[in-house]
Image (cartoon, rainbow, N blue to C red; front, side, top):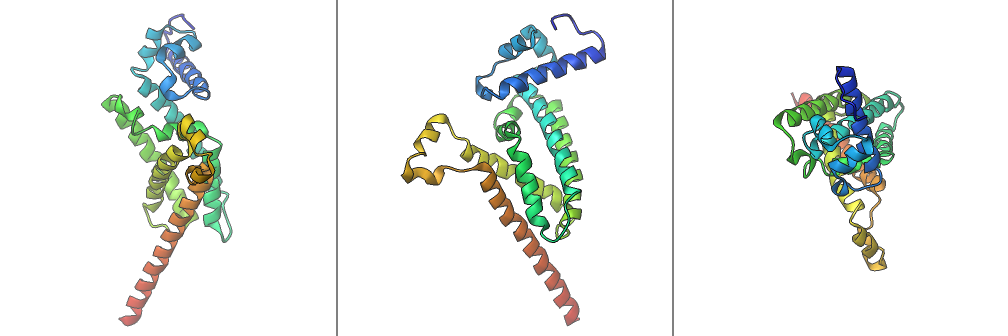
Length: 229
């Protein structure tokens, strides 16, 4: 691993090896406790070599988030294509919730995206990430709109943005600091003990049924207006 990567294929292999190593360490260690030196050592590289591929720790983990999001969106797109029948809202909620629950590393990264990962990256890195996210939101959002006909054009992408906000807020509450986890075990404080999947599903249920009701009222108003003319 310490030999210099010369060809583009070798460089890409080394870049991916760094990402894989960082991802493995992240499964057991909080982001704040990881250092670029530890990642380099685990990857069998000099610290300076890692910085040749990722200028900052934030840029490295932003690249990790991009890969994890790509896998999540691929799974969601496939799952949405299999949804059929009457109660599609419940199926969509189950799909989104389950695909987040089995990816705790993804939710951990999403929770620190805006407050940490986007704070020490270049303009080019930020722009590339946002355009990547926009592409995923628009493609998967369009599939959502076909699956849930009450969604208007563009509402599918906006719904995914709202889901992102739910993940960030709910994960912060459901995954507090170790000392807080101990404190909320007291019976009088169980109010603050949250299960991420359940809370996310409940919030998404309210959101989707609210959008469906809004669409029904909109259709009724259009019908009544036509009747009156």
